[in-house]
Image 1 (cartoon, rainbow, N blue to C red):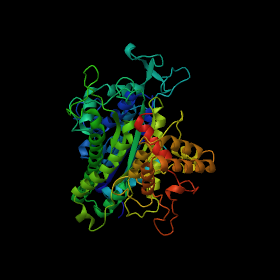
Image 2 (image 1 turned 90 degrees about the vertical axis):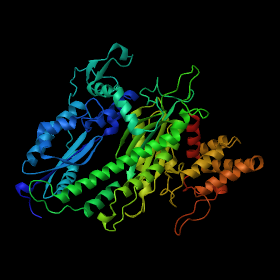
Image 3 (image 1 turned 180 degrees about the vertical axis):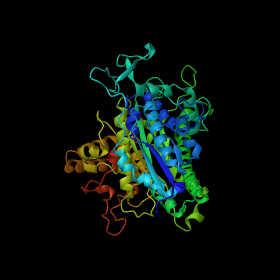
Length: 575
């Protein structure tokens, strides 16, 4: 296509915040986590974003650099990331000026937040954007160092280890924290902005009852269940999004550029991606809101009056047993009370399938694609159930690791056109220090034999190679029905660490006792195992068969669901 002339140049700029989870978790307090989430969202928010402190930063940078005069066309503008294209002979210089202003502002507004930005130049918007994205790998190795590096005499903030810049107000101090670093101060400015919190509340859960609030403090505001305190850290990520974008890029080729303004085809190309980005955002938020309606709302309302429950003093219980941390694109990170975490994850994954399908259909892309199929958008999730006192940073990292494992397992053996099954990988952490899930599987789960992770969810999760979460729920209910099955099952799971012979003998005795005392429970237990694939039959040619329930422990290569079901029971109890 040749090198574009001066009047035909197209320039793309892409910005992405990276390393978001460590930035969110630094300091370990829910208040700081909330503030960090709101801060990241504000970076790209327009100036009219409900009066949020710091909103309009991107617009200010575009005016200061002269980019706004060239009418930038955005393909995406969301929390912590955006991309736009410019046309005209002045575009390269204006984008370089914008980069200089914008990167300085980001480091000042969000100290310590890693980011990467890329610039691409080409004969049309598609080639310019592709060049920018291809340069991303090289730019990631050159991410700017954080400002305010500590000197040898600097006093450090105890929660983060970063250089302290101010003493805290007397009402904010405690024995462990008297000074704070710059990033923590920035985060708390957002966490304490009630207007911002209320706006996020409206966006996330528009149909919630009046008066409900998201908690900002684990100790004083989070509505725990009794004396036990466990929290589920859920991280979900969409599947096939990149493939859909590639399909759209090929189908909506904008042709050659002409003149110093975007052509009609180029504007249409930009609009397609902007609309698609918005559709994915809408599907994610809608799925989260529906999960909140299904799982969170019933524990907040009195079933008799359908009004907010009240405490012994007659005061309405207004705090939600969850806290959204990050929702953007096809990603979600949310803290949910331990007993509600698995049902919330299941509902979100199921609803995301439906909402994504509906939003994509409303885009009416089929005429553009001329018969090319659009892969179904699904999501996989990782859920780490931890004690409320365990480090937030480690819990977030474990949830991300679980999500990555779920995505890897879900995609095994699938062609590009096959839908990736929605699935959930979960782990209830009992160790004081949390490792990656790879280490957990190796050291705590006998190389993966003591878990059937991940479990299929939703329409596409009913995969023949993946045990369904519905089967695990059935197994959990069978073990927890009060017939004395839970204790022996826990003992058997523990014996598996010591040797298969002891475990098999104990399992056989337990089944014999249960057959005499509670045959209905044993029948339900066996039916649940059958739903999880333990039938003694191969489900497809060439695939090894899982043993039948009576011989559950006979095959040393079969992964087992007992510990997963017991972990779910413990999470329900809040233990």
